Image (cartoon, rainbow, N blue to C red; front, top):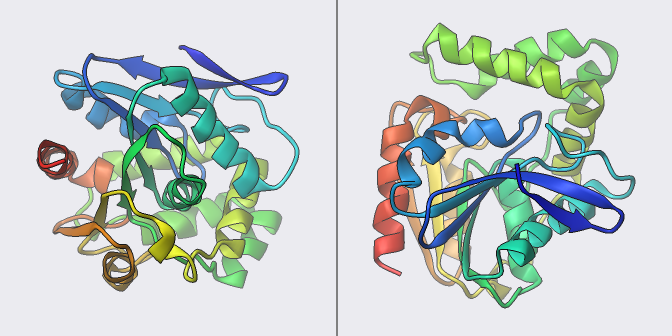
Length: 250
């Protein structure tokens, strides 16, 4: 896997395909493999990168504020690619994308916001359970992440991923989400934005995405039915079509 330098450490990312650059940012308790179905299909037309945020996957943890260090991770990959980028994030990754966009990097062409919001408050009971009973917290989160019809294989895969990422990273991720708010500054973002939400998303309901669509200057909203919070896993073909359609109109 290629790396991007951040201070004295590195951020790992998967890179494949050729063409317009797409960079995917995972959410809480995940890593770059969350985007496996996007790599499989979109690499035929685009240069697709997906990073491991620090403390996840192959990227070593850096001390400091979660949102700040995660934002640096995304910016470092964009800098390493050194070309116009469509930056897309899921959940916590969407918060990171919004924070990147507010810094207005020169090579940010457009943003994608999947299953996320301008504010991501977390139920205090979830935060406390992550700290006291990690495996129980993972079980509770899985009940909220998927639509009722999601295959058991996806739930098992996602459970294994969260357990592998570990308690420390998950706690930091959700604490970062809980502190995040961009509600007062969305109008400052002036790049095209694709906003996507699963019709059955219980963690970041459709109203969160509707708010983003209403407040961002140049936003397009797509609701994908038959998906919960993890749209890229439950309805990958639909998400890939939506991404292609958006990019073709840029």
